[in-house]
Image 1 (spheres, one colour):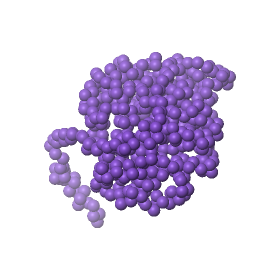
Image 2 (spheres, rainbow, N blue to C red):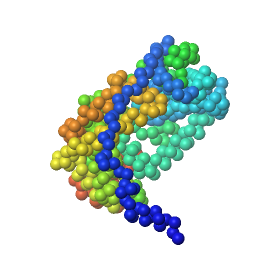
Image 3 (cartoon, rainbow, N blue to C red):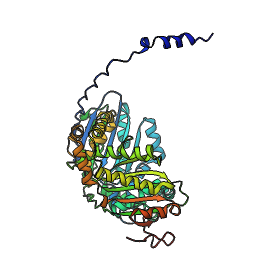
Image 4 (cartoon, rainbow, N blue to C red):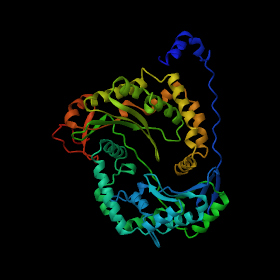
Length: 481
């Protein structure tokens, strides 16, 4: 006899017994007030500001020494100097090789790391609070006495050259490199690291860059975790007493360049897909309509249920996913949209993106439901971003680096709540204009070239480093602007 039969009979004969759904759905819970704990502020004897976000839940700590000097300071012809210098500072210090430094940190259960991007650099240490003193000793060595051994640079340079060659074979990487070059026109974020620039960098260059840029006047220290503010500042003061170098670093003054009504095509023969991008200038982080544009972006292309993703992915099946977002830094942001699409629908995908933008600018403004759903989703998820102390430190570092209001974090939720359908649409119309859009496609030109020429845009062909091909006789496209 089938043992499941009595249960099936019960379900069939007595559905009311099993129907436990409430007569009416309960009202949603209210949104709790979001407020980060106030960190403690201190200053070292050498003038470096220190922010301490204590959290005694677990016996762990992290220290971040931040600098405003970023890769925008790279000398012409030596692009990549900043990033390789920060990667090399823990490859050997006075009295310790890279291997000895690594073993010492592992014995302590600590991690000493460093890195840089376009806008800044940092040297970090994290570990067990019981080993705070010994870990700070290692951090001070990396900060103050890096040796930049030539043998280690030879190995690192070879790896970086190989990475650049690999990036030139990846359509997504090509798109990122080229778009940055187009936006910043050879300045700020638009200067590419190359085999030649890496070959020109010496360990003496690294030492000189460090001396000029990793100085107290460009620094801030963030500390988080199981520490006491006064105690940790005293420990830092004793270890950094000799760090008194003076000097000045020129600030980043980005000058973006829009290239309207132009489609740039990078040929990647045999590419299985095309990478498409569209970009224009966006608001700065301090602009009054920044929150309106954040919500407008979510509704248009920043969320899974956004207009663009539902069109290209769900309705058309052109892509696995389409996204839009901001590229933030010093100065204005850039708003971009993009996707990886099937080769045979490259032009059709661009047409759909163009149509969605035109709709948001005209006949299809953002609705109250779109704005409410996206703003609420962002608001409810925002507090969860700060569960870890590291996220709090990152937020404080961003506020310092970009000179944002001290209550920038607390402004975020009220700012999103203030957005209406009208204000979101108005911000989108202000910052996204059809005659100010720059388009980029990376794909197989032999298969997509003729179709993209029908879009009504000036088509310019580029190589994989963003240089104009002059002329590209194979495609018949213009070789200059």
